[in-house]
Length: 385
Image 1 (cartoon, rainbow, N blue to C red):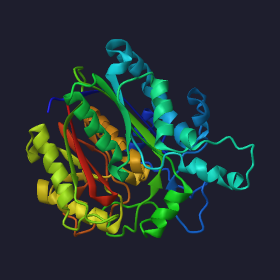
Image 2 (tube, rainbow, N blue to C red; image 1 turned 90 degrees about the vertical axis):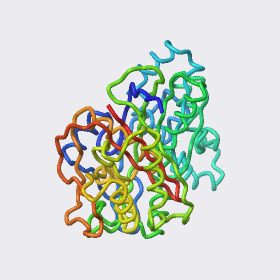
Image 3 (cartoon, rainbow, N blue to C red; image 1 turned 180 degrees about the vertical axis):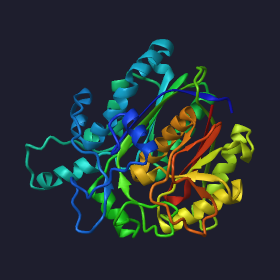
Image 4 (tube, rainbow, N blue to C red; image 1 turned 135 degrees about the horizontal axis):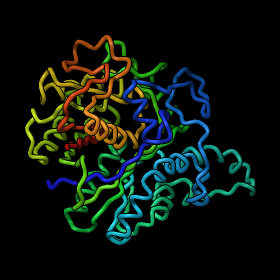
């Protein structure tokens, strides 16, 4: 594929409300997990919860929702670069693809008791505050873009799938630039749902550890501005997708789908395995996912492959997870620094990769980033200098 320039990007999550804050904490190995404050639970768990979220009046009534407050922390950071792109290409030549899972579920949960009592004072509309549409349209209006737009909701692979959709739009000459985003907020439904699957850890997640007990949920937003013919210091080099459809919520134990998405990304980038300097793993900290992904990585790249999982610091951000780890990989390339995986030691001896547990200064050329979703929806994206 032709390289796609990444000309602007942003993160916001429990580690910080700006990209610089998040990245400083990532490379220092800081976590921000706490017992749920906004969503108290009758069982023990911790989350990467964002506190004291500012309102988002720029997007009207949607700005009252938790997910839009989080979204705007990221959107504001790239708005000037999007404005420049609009001036350069025209608003109809800029697309917008958003990955997400929860949409406005949390807001609907918060107003449901009053709605069920028929209280007329509740200002609520499913279209403007609950659905994925209610997240996408106000953001597109805020950015002032008028090209193709959609939301992809393929569970935890959503925002890497969004990058793949943007690439297809470029190939079809529908756009000259695309805003790619991923946003999800915590909700009672999400936390209880993962607890019912037995996937939640009581304490902070420990990816690839022999003592791992489950994942830790988080919330956040990530954005990238992609431009077809621009120059940058980091590019999207290759993308691979697969769907193994093994199980509703469990990965194929042979890792066939994960392997296939990584192989397709390498082929798309016209790279051999030795060109990849480290793997940014999905690495949720669940028993089966880490084992299967670890086997797939070692089978393709070899047992000495460096691997890291930044979910050990951000928590699992669901639809925002893929773009969050992609932006972190971008910063790794720029800084020549591999982020640590917190909480791994002792590493599971059945996982034959080298998990980086301390920041490592390395001359980096290319990184592959994995995103694995429920239902066997797998995606991998390669970034390179």
